[in-house]
Image 1 (cartoon, rainbow, N blue to C red):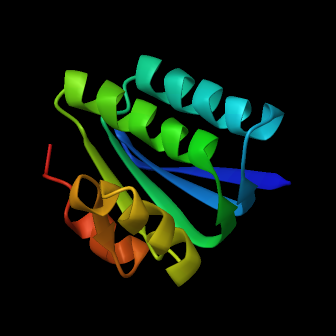
Image 2: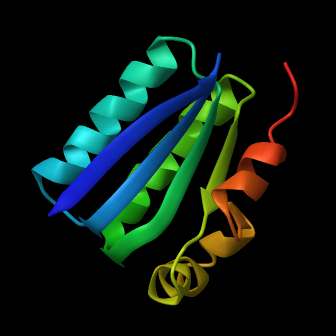
Length: 116
């Protein structure tokens, strides 16, 4: 099961906290729908807070890739914060740790977002 909590930090900046498992199924589809809704509403910078994410499969990784691609189209940024070692390993194995920016805390990821 995946729990998704969002917080609008300031105009155009959204923090999305994920808890549980991001796997193939309706939960990961709801994440994609949420991201699309936020982007359509003007979000340009997204930070995923991943300290509660326990498991990730290729579908979950695909959701992050989709988000990254959408943000690049609007000159936005994507930050990955507080990922547990098992989650980081999923990105390392796929070499996506060289594409996504990882931060130790959500505060660090938020601080890295360019000022509007």
